[in-house]
Image (cartoon, rainbow, N blue to C red; front, side, top):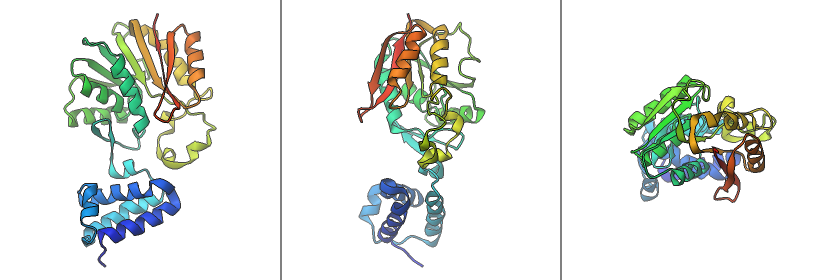
Amino acid sequence: MTVTIGALLADSTTELTALSGGSAGIDVKALLCHVLAQPTSYLYTWPERKLTAAQLAQFRQLFARRLQGEPIAYILGYRDFWTLRLNVSPATLIPRPETELLVEQALALLPATPCRVLDLGTGTGAVALAIASERPDITVVGVDLMPEAVMLASRNADAHQINNVHFIQSDWFKALSDMHRFDLIVSNPPYIDETDPHLQQGDVRFEPMSALVAEDSGLADIRYIGQSAPDYLVASGWLMVEHGYNQGEAVRRVWKEAGWHNLQTQQDYAGLDRITLAQRR
């Protein structure tokens, strides 16, 4: 059986839309481009081209996984973030576009001179690598509790030849010495309440719960970071975390209780609270 690019694109998009909604067309294009090893423009330039039997079989296999709800990033094994294509795995969260705001704000806050940045819960290394790639004059350290994540982040650094970042296994700060202080600490920690119904929907069903869920209505890890970070920051150093759209006020409250000042919450491009930052006294 021979199938053209145009027909496969149309039929598969229709089938997937019934299950996953608005992202179906993007997902099908991503799978098809992956199988054909071609850019998206190829699909529109050559819609009458026929797939080989091997290409069609590969697409059907990958598409079946997407029909079961598996995230595109896990199926393809990578996700684009900032200017980087990063390897991903089910051991880590999938980097999301909204987290790029954390990178933007970190870069805007950093001094022009060489400094040190710590990324807590680095996962794929997305935030650490994006910051390090933009500022080759600084030193970035990424930590993660899971050894699989540390290895994955290190491979991503090697793939992009980013040499001013290194990754270590650590339960938050525990493997670090307070003799090594940082100018900025960033984190995208677990912040979802364990009763949140969104945990049973979409891509997060396949992602590690340990990287998503925190106790105390999602604030436990953010609270701990706020209490511990001053010991690892230089005087007047900054702490910055990503959090849920409805947690900005709560994060400011618990950090104010911990003694931080210059607290502020930044909104994402949808106008939702996304990042809170504070300065060490």
